[in-house]
Amino acid sequence: MKNAEYHSPVRKEGFAELGDYAAIGEGRSVALIAPDGSIDWWCAPNLDSPPLFDRLLDPEIGGFFQLEPEGSYKVTRQYRQDSNVLETHFETETGKVLLTESINSTLAGRLPWSELARRIEGIEGEVTLNLALRFGTRAETRSPWMAQTKQGDVYHIADLMAMLRTSDDVEITSADDEQITGRLKTTAGSRALVALLVTEKEPLAVPPLSAIDNRIETSHIAWCDWARSLSYEGRYQKHVGRSALALKFLWYSPTGALAAAATTSLPEGIGGEKNYDYRYAWIRDACLIIKAFAFLGALEECKAAFSWLSQTILRHGVQLHACYTLEGDMVPEESYPPLRGYKDSTPVRIGNNARDQTQLSMYGDMLATAQQFVEAGHVLDLSTSRLLGELANCCADRWRQKDSGIWELPELQHYTHSKMACWLALDMAVKMAEEKYIEPTWVKRWQRERDRIRDWVESHCWSESKQAYLFYRGSDGGLDASLALVHRYGKKVNPQRMLSTYAAIRQELGNDGAMLYRYSGVEKEENTFVACSFWLAEAWAEMGEINKAEQAMEEILDTICDKGNVETFNEMFDVRSNTWTGNLPQGLSHLALIFAAQAMTNYDKHAS
Image (cartoon, rainbow, N blue to C red; front, side, top):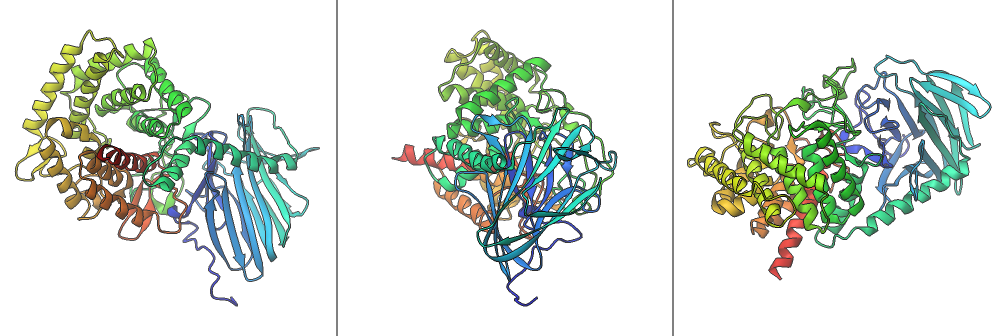
């Protein structure tokens, strides 16, 4: 290498670092792009479809779509302002290139096909880029095949049809059933386009290249219109805006469902077995994202998501399931395709067995979200109002049970967070009944059960020696960071105990730092949980400890945002190696940032 300043991104055994991926999407699917120009993950046409590109989980046999400069190069990336259109700048010894990428939509919404567009512009000098496209084989259960047509070569992968479209200056050097390769030389002022069109069980439309190229700008305008329509005005505006755009990736526009993340099986700890499929809609995650959309003033998404959630629960009954598919069906049982897994972390999972768990905190999630919905000025329909009353009665009956808790643990316990969340559910039910949003027939019962939960928690879940609420009744001094989510309980029931608990959580689960592990002992097998870290900052602000909230927020942002990344948050961050782990983009991580910023903004308003 002639110039030592050019350092191409390095893969280790074929894997890029998880924190180096950027996302693009259009409200139906999400693609993940590594710094070396490789799209390593794309489930098309839907977020929870089988992956078309899955190099992320197996470099040897996984599919990918790469545009990479020849030789050594430097790379910088950023999203356009107020947009999810991604710009990547490649600089080599001979020139500079701008790569602009989008999964296209229209101003009226998504296209009836999937259109992944990649525009290549020469900025200065000359740069040669190599193109490589290999379709995934669904863990070698499908064999892609090519058919030649008058419109161009069409690839069949199970029920998918795909076509690669390129401008004339892209030279295709080989094309067979398994792979396409090509080359492109850029010069100052040159402009080329590469696009992949995909459809499932439908005819494939083949638009002109000029229309595809124009839709990159149309998509950018649509993103900007949405981002600029948000009503949030407060602290950390830039970070909140970027997290809002990240959450929009997870809003599945065909139904209004909210996916927890766009990937499956990315490990919470490298080499471990905590590798789960998050491409479904969890009641917990969906409720929290709906609240975040309400804070932001994203009325359409808030209404659509809440309607989808209430209708899905009505379909399946008030014995809530933890998660549902994006179409509102039952999540499939786990299966284990024989893939290598990210950095040899197995098993790779499709489906999620958490669907059948008892998680009592979901009642609190639903009732609190409904209260947030009406506080934002919206009106409940009769069916949803009756559903909320049924959920409150179900909570009043079931709160005494053991459950798997918010962390979906196999060991059934009386988790403190679950009990406090049941208290919150009934407290919200009482409030909405008193305000005539739901039927008040059972309000006296809800009040009595709410107070019984309070008495039970205060008697069974408080540790005098720890001066903290415990992880669960009888736990040996264990703590749980998710108690930061139930600060309303602390404010109304026992503020001093809750503040003391939060101090203990920061000390023990953060090793005296702002980045927190989920619960005691889990640091042995996973990393700090980004959402918990922001939740505690939110809780400090809600409890009036604004200095602690500000200190925590600044430390978190300095840790995870000043790394030259594009703020596409994973689930977890390893403070020991400064690397990201877990699925991405992770809704909980982004919404928790919004909650913390909103809580501090509310404190400012009340203080003034």
